[in-house]
Amino acid sequence: MRTPIHSSLEQVPSPLRQPSRLDSWGVDAGQLWSAVCSGLIWLLVCGGAALFAQRAHAQQLTADANELRHRVEGLVASSKVESVGNNGAKGFQVEVVLGELDHRLKLAPCEKTEAYLPTGMRLWGQTRVGLRCVQGPVRWNVFWPVTVKVWGQAVVPVVALRPGEPINQGDVAMARVDLAASSSPAVTDMASVVGRMVSRSVQVGQSLRESDVKARRWFSVGDIVSLTVKGQGFSVVSEGTALTPGDEGQCARIRVENGRTVCGEPVGERRVEIVL
Picture (cartoon, rainbow, N blue to C red):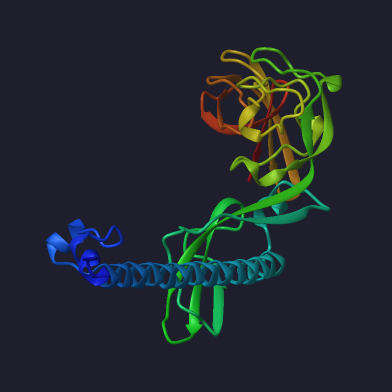
């Protein structure tokens, strides 16, 4: 007697349905995969939102940078750069280089910004310019690093200058340099440095600064000097003995014939002037 087919099938375990660890844990596989897919979708959504926020922030910073550059250039154009005027430089060109804001800053959207020069700062060399929101939902204020370069003609060495060696006429020339690269004014008159010595080594092509050049010493202690006293409508010349060195730009003490001591300005080789 033949065994019924359905009975035989019930006795043979089916290879298509094997027990898994998920079954032993009491977890449905379909629910698990659904949860995994939901998590992936959530990560993609969050990541896209963060990327969009970063791009929006970067676009705003770029817009703020362009606005700041425009306003700083306006500040420079409308202000008198006294450091250039003091040393007589003419025909100079101003270049504004913006630095980077702290990347951690997140500025709120602003309808109108205003650039200003903070107290104690000047538009010269490495400085800072304030940028504040004056019209918007959130009022913010930041300080943007700025480098103001002022290009103009100044004295540069054509040979290396060493301390203790006088500067000759052929040792220097005029060249275009950044006048604002140092707080010390650039030397713009070649004749003013010929015969003088530098206080430190200055390389070829490097801008020569007033702080680099030693003051002339027109006479030494004990030298007999010519003393000229000038006033409105008169000039008196006499002689005296130097009690202190005659350094350019410094007051020199001179003892005159009657024994009195006066203070005069060294102006030349063994010459002193007093202007009343």
